[in-house]
Length: 271
Image (cartoon, rainbow, N blue to C red; front, side):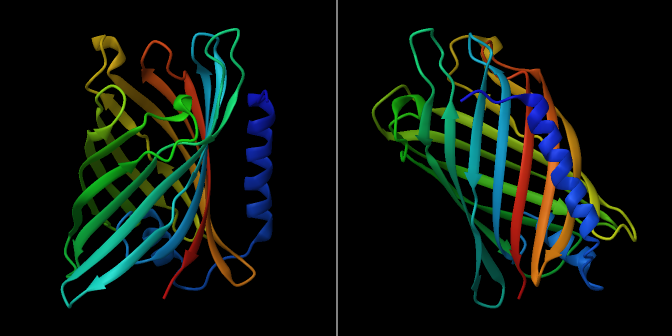
């Protein structure tokens, strides 16, 4: 399956155009709901469906597609704490890396994170907890057969129309077969909710990664730069959050992607 970047961009613009044409603004609480949708540790049940298309992957400059299913479910723990559980289940279309290979399609490894976060309101919101990576990969080209564990921390603030902060995690392999894993993920996020913008906002949420086990120091970091737009709206009675972002990798491994297009549709279930 060959993905055409021009067709993908046109499709993304059509989706955003349809969102705008709906004119289906939320009620007076739309900005609060938008902030909750942009807050990774909000006490909000949601189901983000995120598609990442990576261009220029591998020695043959092919296109890789990763569709992430990311359910979020919060639990109340007594009077003072919440536990926000997040899973990332990737469905991957992996391109051929050699002329005799074919494209591989299947599941990658699943990530599970639990953030313990205080309920008491303050200028800064934070959460900390364990992260696990489970080898659910259906092929060796879609992930290593390793169990990994580590820790995650997130902190953010919500002044005025802004939602800004960062999430960081690091995992180490603890069992299974294959080379040792030691990887970091750093995800800064910056969102500006446009006043009276009927749910529209500007967003930049790059995913910076570091592979501490890389043999060559030039292959350690992936650093994207970019951003995009999003909108909180209603589809019938169902609150939704949709966004489109594009990133250029200013630092990347030798065979890493040159740039990425991210499309996300998030189902929101406010209490």
